[in-house]
Length: 115
Image (tube, rainbow, N blue to C red):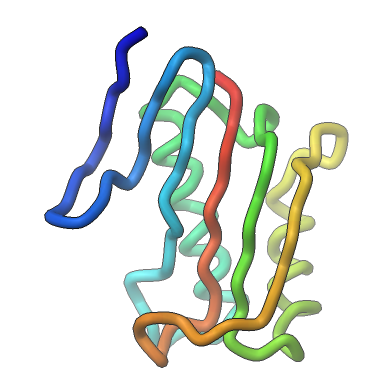
């Protein structure tokens, strides 16, 4: 079976396809001046783009890992997530507090999806 890598950098691929599964790297917002809701919207827009590029969709999510830099931001992030997610096809999910590589980043999301 072939492996297809999308949007590679010097250290990672932003999306990897193998068989009928799509793996997304952790996605953070580009505009780190936004609040957690704005960053979450931007992250989910990028996730939509990557999933479409791989022939998948948010209705096919299998697993989500979410990191927030302040767990008190979880309700605001969840508000945006809930508006975006397919309520009938929710993934297994975890959300934890963690330091991110750039201290201005407030949320990072990594997903696995079916094709």
